[in-house]
Image (cartoon, rainbow, N blue to C red; front, side):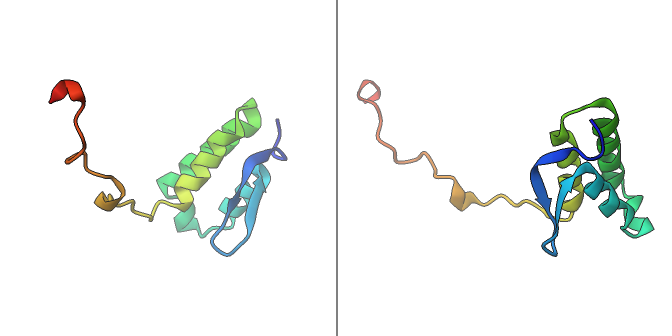
Length: 96
């Protein structure tokens, strides 16, 4: 595999651009400010890109690394409205 390998699903960037190949992702990372590049999540993404490109690994690993670095500021919050409580459900006949 080489740097021209394509991701299964392109990575959408905030400004509408898309990363389609490993080379696109590597170029994007090298254009980041130096302080940003040295962040641990981007370092992990770079390592994943190199491993995939040089060792014929699955491109999904590199995609996951880049996505985690892109979304590191996004905090997932638990929303209790999404899960229905089990209270009040009908019981089985054997449990009555």
